[in-house]
Image 1 (cartoon, rainbow, N blue to C red):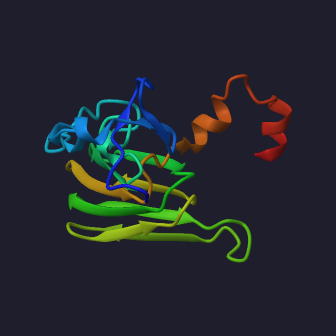
Image 2 (spheres, rainbow, N blue to C red):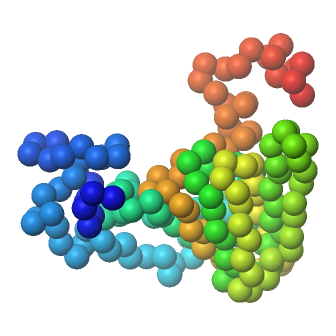
Length: 181
């Protein structure tokens, strides 16, 4: 790092471009640039997956710019799923605050050969999803579940596998999908 912080700004006028965002003049930074409120609220999970992710990253907490970290709250309805996905720019640290979750990841098809690692997670349990690997969480309980995730990136990115493959724009040629699956 070349400075203590680099609060992200959208307006490039008289700003410095660092790590994908423009930096606010540090003399104009305030405590609000480093503040986010609302992670104490259970979010609406009445969707087809039964889950809701509240991300806190450089896009909604400007003070995270260049700090190499972000987080998320994941709310699960009973039997809700955070579907198989990957973060192309981050390792994920995952901790259960409420409920029982079945979590896992799949290794790359290199040395470990698409090996599946899974664990049943309970209150206070921690699981780590290695950088860029496909992973998921499923609420196996009859009550809501809540977890927090920490990421080693200010913007970890998200690729939901089913969406990327079946909802690409333009569509992937069906012959490709048929042969692949």
